Length: 137
Image 1 (cartoon, rainbow, N blue to C red):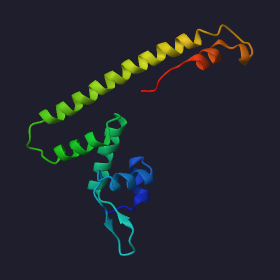
Image 2: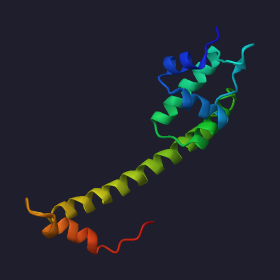
Image 3: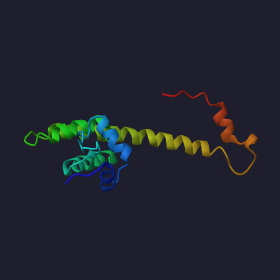
Image 4: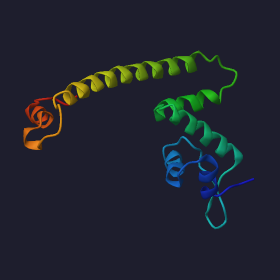
């Protein structure tokens, strides 16, 4: 059975624009075209899109997804490369969590600067933010 892009988007809980984007970046194979040039997707397209969506729900970068899709097409190969890829992503998540922990501490310290309601011209949070000579990384 073949589906038009709107039906694919609906069946995979995905926006039409996202389906087109995944095609454009090569994560999703180009669909068939009808005589009137409508995109037509197969069950395999839907399965691949669901796989991509699941990876994205785990915040995997597109390049990792591309590698996983390639590895998925080699069913008789050892899964060590897949494990390495997921381990790398776990390390990234751990780094993000540490960074977010630091951000939370900074925000809590900033919030601690203001004890209660007052005017913004005497607000210690505004004063602290104005005095900060922070550098973006």
